[in-house]
Image (cartoon, rainbow, N blue to C red; front, side):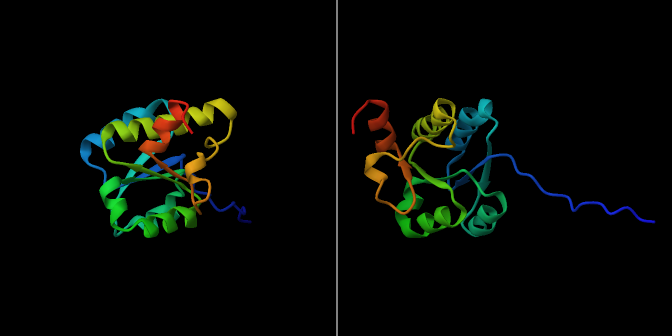
Length: 140
């Protein structure tokens, strides 16, 4: 008599999926995420959709120049997998953006802080550097 065993369920740790970030920005993002238990995975444009579907990231972190090339496509990918969209033009911007998102997790127990007013009307919440700086400085 064979035992019926349940089908294994694959579990992925909470993930930030990075697209097109330079090595220094990836390194800074990894250090920022380290204590939180959120993993950082890198992908490329060819694998973006499949990796997003596989890992279901909390945040899709995109290089600012790459994002400017086709913002609607990145918005759509983030929306399709239920991820927040972060846009970073430098290592410092990535650190501040991710730090703000992680602070929101610790502050109110939810995955992310409420959307900033400037992104409230978007189909997916966008977290770019200017919005994060404004929120940190208390400007609306």
